[in-house]
Image (cartoon, rainbow, N blue to C red):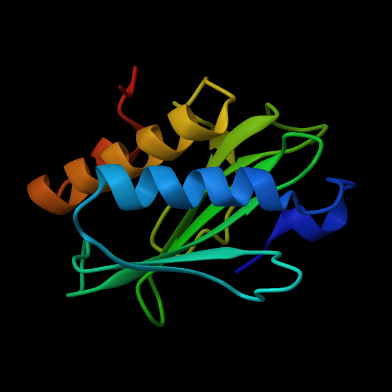
Length: 147
């Protein structure tokens, strides 16, 4: 999987934004079984373990927010199923873009998520995920006008 996040200047992780994403996920998505930070002292990533999956029984989101307001919601189900919603500078695609499943290794396409504030982005990502889990339809990940 190619992760273009590392190739651009996104800024330092923002613990307050990560904490907001954690609170929203815990409060609004009952299938979040665990919400933990990679480090209690200097969090870089929020990990959301899911009691459900699109192709497997469970999945996980690795969430990153930076002080510049850039984000990455990387979803994985073990080996071989990944996708990602990103917001960061890129010359060849819109700033808000989506790396499609099954492996997110191709180039990005424009994202259906247009909002930019932590609670709304988190809710939109989780709603797109839930719709795909419930329907089994991967097209739901890029459904226009997420709630």
